[in-house]
Image 1 (cartoon, rainbow, N blue to C red):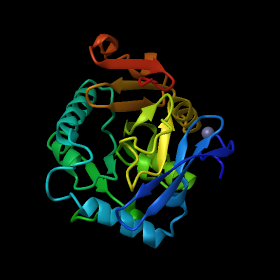
Image 2 (image 1 turned 90 degrees about the vertical axis):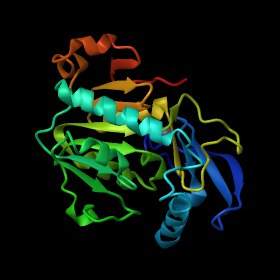
Image 3 (image 1 turned 120 degrees about the horizontal axis):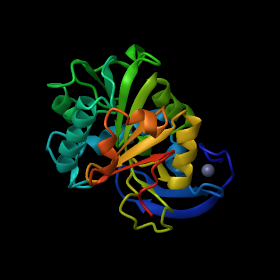
Length: 261
Ligand SMILES: [Zn+2]
């Protein structure tokens, strides 16, 4: 297979045995150029089989209010809501068009935001609740902010990736929470290799995707583990609130903010 991001060829990286959900041995490949790692076996599962695995995995903890694979989840969600509201109140996130929580799960983040953000929609391909948008109701180029927390690592094709960016308005932003590292460890015991994680991003890969998608500058909020991507240069994006650049725990740069080594 070739890299979804930079199109370079991939090498075999390692295999990992999964005892849950009937997965068995999963093969991982790594891009020769940008280092992005792909769970090839999971990418090749037929869509129906993948849906079964995704639903079985998420049903194993949803409703409990906890995720054993992500114990800090609720604290982080509060921090994400806080930073998004702060940015919106200071004019650094637009609210003239609706926000969309894409891959919202049970919709916890959206419900924290909806008291102060007038229009926020929820969508999840593998989790349906009353009031959620159907896939056919998503409007390309419509949303001022697309929130993607813990979704990018579940995607299975380049077109899945591009569909996310395609929903954001011309001057809109992306709020992104996923794991991005300098290198993905060659270690079958690495904590992030979950049965539902398909793509493992590197700073080099993410920086290319960022440019391919037409973004120019970014902020990273360390506590919330959240990136905000802007389509404008930083100086324009933050002119309403230049003090942002000196706030503790917030990092801003032209291009993709490669925070993690
Ligand atoms: Zn690549």
